[in-house]
Image (cartoon, rainbow, N blue to C red):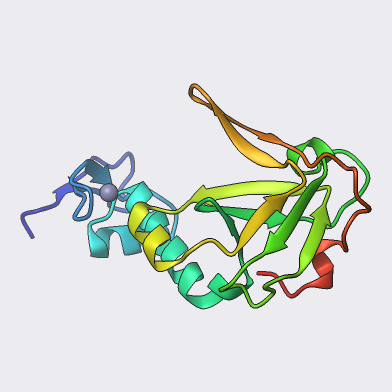
Length: 167
Ligand SMILES: [Zn+2]
């Protein structure tokens, strides 16, 4: 193989890692990551971000109809209603699921919302949004900073996320 360059090892026993050009985005990459990432990245000649996109795509293929995707971003609505370390500092977010979600038309309230990865443009075409925020909740972009406004809390909360079979 001439398209990969071995990276120096500190010890003989260290795993041999390589540098190469990412086959997907064309950036310089190495596969010096934990397994199973390292081997998969080398096999596909992927950089860290393109490997993440592959992993995300596998999850989307498997679980799309049970995921919470709003404006091309994956969310994890948690069930905790008290205590510290809740997502979005415990603020309230009301969410309605849309087709093609299997929960189309159902609504939940979460006080523990976690923002996950953003889909690539081609993933957004293939895997459309499955949900939307309600009652004034939204993602806002202020320069480089992304922030979220919670729901206004004027309505009774909807059931917690565990009322639905979410992925
Ligand atoms: Zn890449």
